[in-house]
Length: 94
Image 1 (cartoon, rainbow, N blue to C red):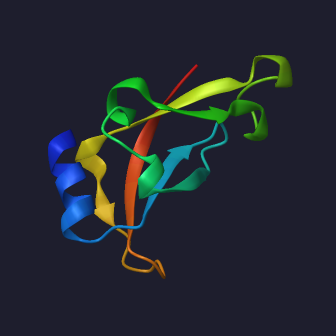
Image 2 (image 1 turned 90 degrees about the vertical axis):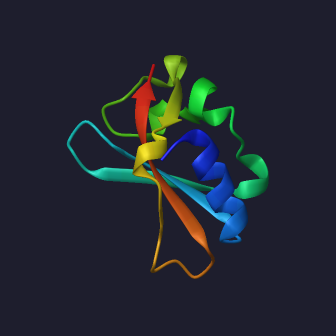
């Protein structure tokens, strides 16, 4: 699936939220969810900023800015979410 396919899927399925998932240093799944109104195609190139100090083993508070870069090939609609939600697995960048 391409970036354009993901954006088309959001429209076609009436997706309301995007759940960005990644693995922390001990190997546990972490995630955060954002509204589709805050998510756009730029996220696949520029990433989505988050506070790395809030994730165990990532960063100290003074150097905590990190990026999640979604991989469009991992996109799927979460069948268990109450609202239509698209899941994307992300690469973490410092």
